[in-house]
Image 1 (cartoon, rainbow, N blue to C red):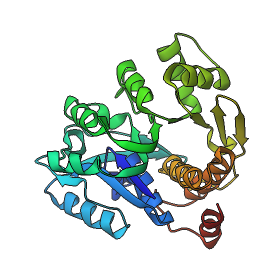
Image 2: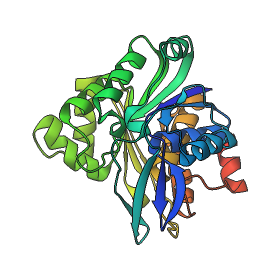
Image 3: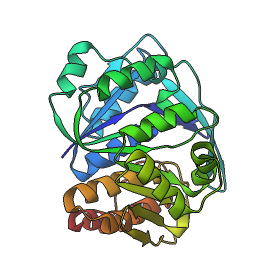
Length: 294
């Protein structure tokens, strides 16, 4: 299974302790733990944090063919936790904001038949990055293109979200993001199903995944709805829980073609990660078996 995540790789600074993260990186790290050949396309700096990020990415099993070094500092994001819920201060003008790939690297990634391309909104906040996104998506081959909208502060626009949806085959967002995006995209408040069906019709999306924290996930396709229940856990922190859901959902769907199964297993891994500290904890034996059987 070949996957490519495009976007931010950065250090979340939680209680003065750096933890390597960024949504695309977290998804790739979990996919690598599951056994996928998981690539990350991003940039780090030439500084100490950049060296550590590169080393840790390789130690986690990520493919670094499309990870580059640029003349900007490696990204950092101070994180404040309130009852386990994170709030972020996203530093600007860091390496992932100006990530670079050579023409040879872009040509190379277009020779691969990708099973899934994973991307989000935040890494498209700079013109530099949007130009690289355009180069990558021009002629790329992929079975699925998974777009996690992952809204952060005001680092998004209607134009960026619409262009991303036009590229995507699977769209993931959370319940709060529905309330933001329905008026932005369709000029009115909408319930989950109506919003999802509007996205499917307008942007030719195959499936819309709406996560609802402990209440599970609602998956909508053109023909069916799937309501996967959440798993009650004692929350340590929710950093990376949504990214682990994405990874398990992608991994299970690519293997089974079953959205209901993918949603169920995604919810279980997301709950497990929320019960642990950090975005990429070691898996329990129960979680390993769940992924193997899925």
